[in-house]
Length: 346
Ligand SMILES: [Zn+2]
Ligand SMILES: [Zn+2]
Image (tube, rainbow, N blue to C red):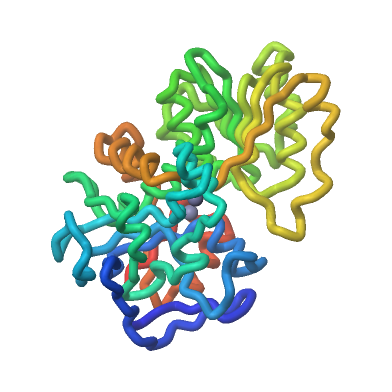
């Protein structure tokens, strides 16, 4: 099969490799679509402790079942399925508490396992067994269903924030993740979402989100000042940092109200994660600061449902599609922030 292998920082080569082996509990899919995630871009240019090259990246995958191990039950050849990539052990304390994304032995497709930037992808037995292979609900195309994984991660990230009726929410970063957070916050009853980005072209995407979303050009407007003006000097109830920028994390602490909650949703590159936050802001304002990592199989099923029912409109997110051999062009488009969501179709 053809596959895109990451060999080194900044280097992906598309080449012929042997088809993946399929063990008795595994499922082999023909990849129909695999979207590029911010973490793929970060891994390619900054590396990741979870990726030992050469590795096929890509974890937002939808495909058609081509082959199944003898022990696989409940699926048929030809089923079109979306994959939940973060695979839990099922046995540790976190798994038994339902927080499978926090599993002590978490292994992820596109990181520890080969991913979806290839013609074929193997889904390991423990993923199949634990509900990570989900048939697409009717009315949802493969291109749209790749959005389930990033949407599931946003659902997970919002769980501890308690967004509710009338809340004023700030989302910093108007990429796919920022737009998903905006849509989810509105679904939960937020009265206003202020969506900020330094890239003007991204803010154009905001127009469709309706009158309760206020775009802010934070390159030319002082974001903290603007939020204080818009909230009668109290600050926002919730601030979600949906970009990989340390300074934005500290800005979030400044513009959130006392007793407010901040999500550090976007991870920082490993060499840039220390020394951004003024912890006294957390202390004196009694701010709750939350992290977010990956998502569970349950949250992925919920995301598929929201997309299929058009509670989150999948149609506006995919702006660029590339063939597998054009993957570096896709990575560059994702990196430059011109695209909302880039999909690679083998
Ligand atoms: Zn992702
Ligand atoms: Zn576990």
